Amino acid sequence: MTHSKNRRIFLLVAAFMAVVLAAYGYQASLISNSHLISPEDLVKVLQSSKLAPPLVISVGPHMLYAQAHITGAEYFGPGSDLNGLQRLRARVESLPRNKFIVIYCGCCPWNHCPNAKPADDALREMGFGNVKVLYVAENFGVNWVDKGYPTTRGE
Image 1: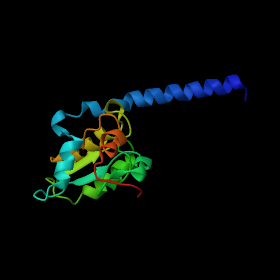
Image 2: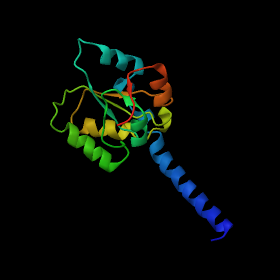
Image 3: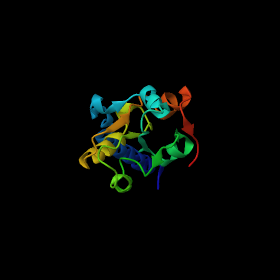
Image 4: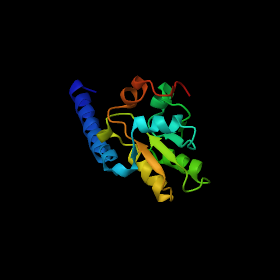
């Protein structure tokens, strides 16, 4: 293959990825503000002895979860992946529909997250009404880890 042909293939793949990311990339910004929870508020909930702890689920890439995740968070796959959504649904199927669930991603800036909205939609379609999505403005490292919030590294 010539250099010119390799370059054209690379540009085609990059253009395709840009279209895919554009289709999914701005979904998180469509989540209603009433469905969001800030990192500061989630920390308060997690540290409260008066409240039942929420089920916290990471819906981002596995590499992000393995590097660092909210202490106690569970992982079933990315929210943008059909297999991840199936595992998420299977995990919560037997739970009461009023169970407090917090989902989060943090893979990238909020307006580019492809994982939070599909996971939120899946849970709400199942009848869960007490679901919050962690608002991660920049990324999990900046908005959670760097602030010293409860974090576990590794699987």
